[in-house]
Each structure stands twice: as C-alpha cells, then as structure tokens.
Length: 276
Image 1 (cartoon, helix red, strand yellow):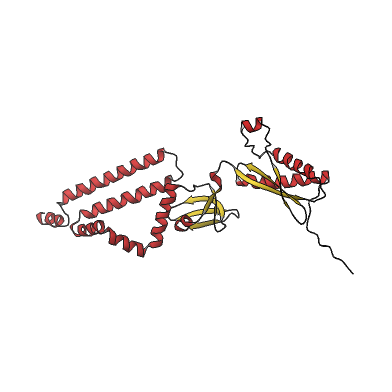
Image 2: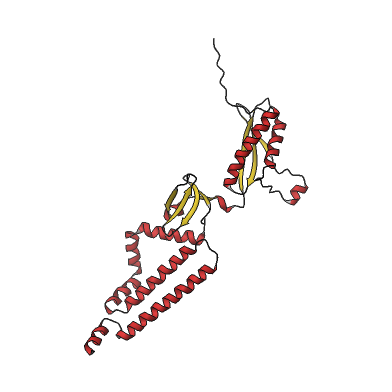
C-alpha cells in the first residue's frame, strides 16, 4: 500500500490526496464561475449573448485544463513554458493558424464594437446586400434578396466598407421621373407631390414649427433638361429599405395613371429616319 501511495505521489507536485482535492476545488470553482458569468450575461438583453457565452466557456475551460495539468509533475514544465513563453507561442500560432486567429479576433471586434447585429440589412463595398442571420466567432452569415445564404469570414467582413441600412430611424429614397417638354410642368409637380403625400408608408418628418410655417412635406425639384424631356426628382422617407422599395413601385404606377388622365406625357427615346 505504501508503495502504491509513493508511486501516485511521484506523479503530482504535492501528495496524491492534495492534488486530487486541488483539482476538485478548481473544477468546482470554474463550474460555479461559469454559471455565474452566464447568468449575468443572460440577465441583459443582448443580440450577441450566445457568442459571449461561448467565449466564457472556452476561456474558463482553458484555465481549468492548465490548472489540472499544473498538478502533474511531468506536465508542470510544459504549462510553465506555455505561460511564460507567450511570445514564442503567439508567433507559432500566428504562423500556423493565421486565418483562424484573424477570424476569431475579427469576430470579437464585431461582437464588442457592434457595427451591425443579427437582423440588420447591410451593404458591402463589393455590392453584396443582405440581412445578417448569424454572427459566430469564425464567420458572419448573410441572407441575400435571392434567399441564398453567404458565409463571410469575419476577417474579410471586418476589413470591408459597410453600410448599415437598418441603423437609421428611417430610409430615404429618390423618386425620379421625366415629362415631355410639351407637358404642363406645374401640374406634373403637383400630381407627384399629392401621390407621395397620400401614400400610407410615406413618413412626414417635418417638425411642428415647419408645419406651422407651411413648409411642404414633399418638394419636387426640376433637376435636369434631358434629350427626351424634363427630369423631376422628389425625396421621400419610409420606415425601411424594403418598405421604400415597394412604395416607389406603388408611386410610379399611381403617378403614371394620373399623368395619363391629365395628358402629361412620359417621354421615351425616339429615332427619326429621313428617307431620300
């Protein structure tokens, strides 16, 4: 029995019983700390709760593994080397897993700085447009208008120039139309303004003072004289990009019908051929 006890003690930095108690205490401490931190995270409303919980579990599990390994005589020096040789270890990891580490760091930056969150509509500088479905430590999942899912590495999306369409309280759009030079310009402007103002999704963002002063909710501008006709442009606002897209379609249809009734012509390019 004494020989067995001596052999077991030789494997650990202290006696076998002390090492066992230390590992048990460390396990209980890490488990309680993990539950406490997760409980704190879940108390606060956060779109990135699952990512934070993953980071907590990974970090505390690493501490637990290192703490247990430190109790073994043969592994103590390895643990000390890992902890004290952080510079060399970081260099090796950087060379061996540069992309993975880059994605992890970028994922943490997205998590803490929050340039976007799940559910936001974003646009990238390479023309990608879609809704954020998921943000993991490795990649971000985007759902496009074509109902496809694109997984972008966090290191790539962190370097991209992004437009967060959802971040604003409203979405601004421009309605651009043309009328012929022979059409009634004032009547056309009046029809466009009326149709925009009576659309149910149009947002009137005037202040109380502006309404009192009689400033119009919609301003239709003459922006250009083109080859085929006069260009008219109106700024309008809606709740979101999707709502604005549908509203522009509705307005083009209703304005076209009103133009037809009023005899206002929407021009189109024409080619005149002279035959000798």
